[in-house]
Image 1 (spheres, helix red, strand yellow):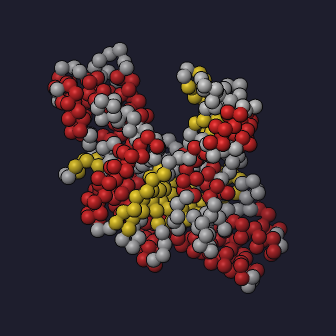
Image 2 (cartoon, one colour):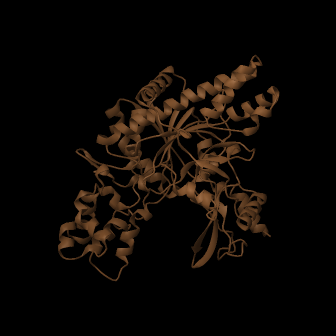
Image 3 (cartoon, one colour):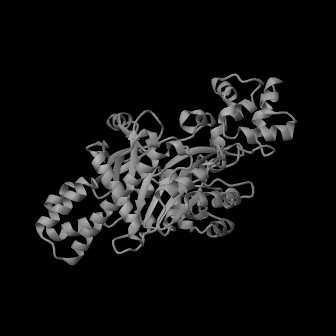
Length: 506
């Protein structure tokens, strides 16, 4: 199937022909839908800690940080360009009319002075058009304003990553999301006077991130009295996936080379696997708020981190007990209750297992990476949701599912999905070392039977693209998962530029 040149290309990417052939098979066959038991809800897969439990968890996290010897990292996927944020304004720029016409366009120009990037944009307008934003608007030259914002001759916001756009105004200047994540890291993830922050970035933006961090770190280190250790990684070429034609044959570029595409954020499990840490916070780059609203975010990060370290310690204690061989049948029943009630993993056949078989089952279920996921009440925001789903061994455990993983022809499943009480805002705290202090090999816990096929195009030709299991979906499928209800106030994503005009971003 592959020419010698194709094979050299595959090997040069750190892949094997067998891997690529398997990807082609996945495109041909698609992915099985997941078998769902129920949407998770408070009391059935989701914890809703009261004030006493919240305070207890915060204290547990503080004690953990003060114990010393623990590495804590804040991991921020920041790879994507912000082009989708400006989709409406790109449309306006290419429209056959010159004045704001849609509600979106009118709102953008009516409120333009409220954007944190207003001054920087005004400067570009003066530089390139010898007129201020106000003057351009008064003369009806709205498109010049948008061009100065989106194009390389201006701020180039159409091609920059979200992490480097100006989001929030402060008396001492405007901040990017990257800076807001530094502040968050200082507030809840600093240990022994140091906050470790890791950004995954695209190759084209790496130097821009590095320069911005070098420029801003001295200010934030002085402000918080701590040191920052900021690192970066790029999505690995070996995690890309092959593109195909509509007939499932490999899509060839004009030079007859194979076309590979980034495999989605699930590829970042490899980057996460390279992180040396006991605890890792994961949160999307655009989910940030100004300092005046950070208290909720900081509090609930501490709460879910406290839940994580306490739950993990209990699992570690049970694993050491199982290793000792000095356990009673009653202690095995106690461990079963922990597995069923705390990490919500249920297996109907446990009652039929002999003690020796039960020990093997419990050790397997306990000795795996663990995550606590904040979930928020469903108010119609897009995103996957918390479910209780069946695993390949017949057990049921908490999973975050996307709509693409659910059989839309199954009325019962669709009802579960549409009537779910909570959704996933990507608010995770992860424990990635085992009870002996050794790092898990995270790719071992990926469900490779999850993923999806999407239709794309290149150079005017239609193609099929293979998306890997999502980072918080299939890539963490075999982790132990605890869902905790967190306030909606902790979820403030920026999907369009006009979202920056919401009160929470002002």
